[in-house]
Image (tube, rainbow, N blue to C red; front, side, top):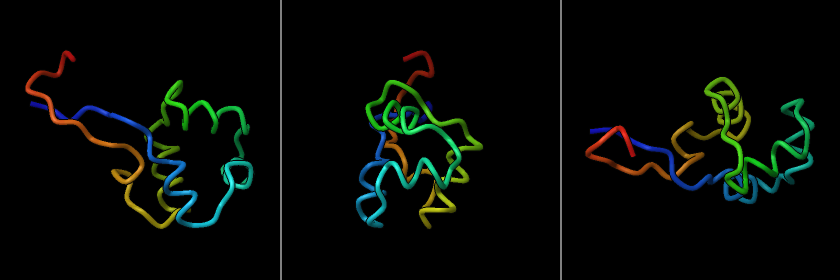
Length: 75
């Protein structure tokens, strides 16, 4: 049994805080393109990036993605 990453919730967290994706990218010192890819689910945050994002957004790392429960780690 394992948790799998589902939909990215970064845009939701940014909207809750009133932060634009462009401002978030500047703060995180990454490209706006990367942030867009993460939001659209085309890229995933590294653990290090997610920890820093959660710290900046004052949320938990687990608040950045929908977590899906699976009986198999192979899904």
